[in-house]
Image (cartoon, rainbow, N blue to C red; front, side):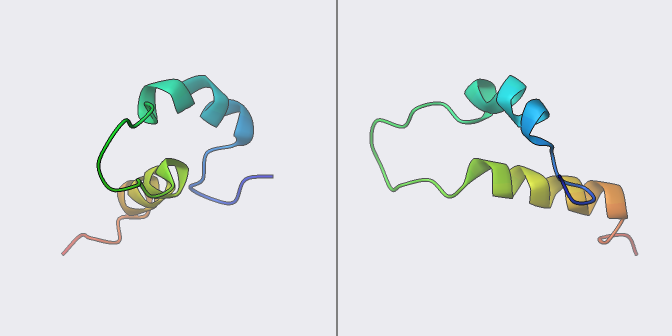
Length: 50
């Protein structure tokens, strides 16, 4: 079960190929799902508003 502002497993399966392309070189990527959940948290919670 997804927590608030997190993508459920079914939604992640739909967009995982678009968001997380295979990386061929460079530094290893962080967890793309974790980064996307962080972006959604900022956008949906309004934490950055002044």
